[in-house]
Length: 308
Image (cartoon, rainbow, N blue to C red; front, side, top):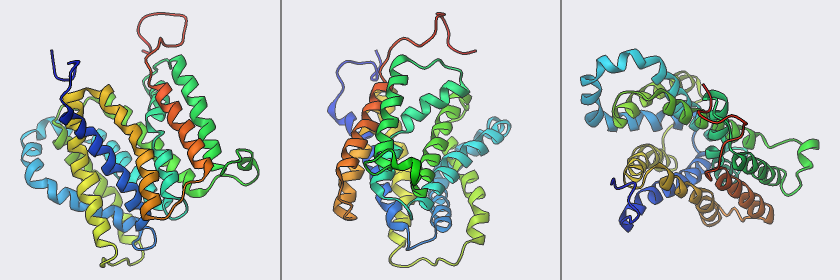
């Protein structure tokens, strides 16, 4: 019996996914704090460039040793690096100027549900009844949240640009997760991360070079360092350890901590006091995600494998 399948899990293993979720939650606050003190294109480039430099001594030898395996998959690594490193976080940095960290955290919590939706299209997996129900509940919660308590407001005023950008970022990351699972790249996780980071830096270089001057200073250097070290390196390591010891299903439960932690941290450090529509809308969105992750039979009259 493997550790992930064991019914009794040592409590210390729970810390791995919990700390990863908390690091990602704090990164939402850091992303919001970066708005106004450093250009989105500049922090996005510096973050992944610095992360790549720090990874080099540990990952580059393995990448070189597996270069014959890696080269045929370079187009797929490029797509993953573009989605997961350049597009997802790049959109989040732009969104931060016109939305709150609270909204960003709640919208990001929709990634597991969006992953199911994208998997339905890309992998042709039939959605479960609970996934459909969860999607409806989450959409109701997001409508309440983005409409600031009045979903009908969306029809007359429209959504906040930052919320729309954050939704696009979450969709990009959902597609990233689906493709990563579908392609099953035959290299180690750190080598895979390193090559993806390299492509992410490459894709962000043009925007960095064309961006208005945004020099590093005492206000933004700590934000760049946190983004480069903790969510880029430590959180993936902790998450991989959590999946190793707990299994992917148990580990994924801890992602539900992210919106709660983000709201709490934003209230303390950014003075973003949650309103009733944040609480109700966030709770509905989170409940929908949890419903969607419940295991039930897939929709459809035929039995057997879903998709093809």
